[in-house]
Length: 98
Image (cartoon, rainbow, N blue to C red):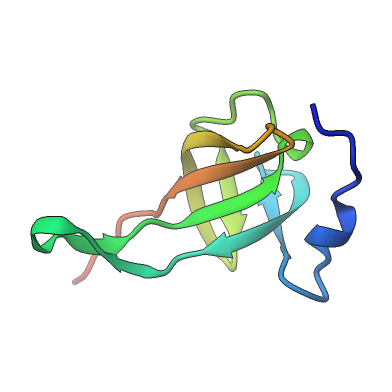
């Protein structure tokens, strides 16, 4: 695995922000929730959070991640390049409208 220190990349004064992983662990992530339009008119948002692999369990699927006041669930995890970083695919809570 890649041994370089990625701490500077996850600086909260730049791109990263703090999130609460698994209810009590503060980690630094780079969050993305951009609107995307795919083929056949399918469009929407898929929130993702990029972080150091060492910040989360080997399989964090199903665990909570609180970010920007929203309680997400980690739906899937994908290694990035050599595996030093991972992309957490998040599931937003359902919105219940009156």
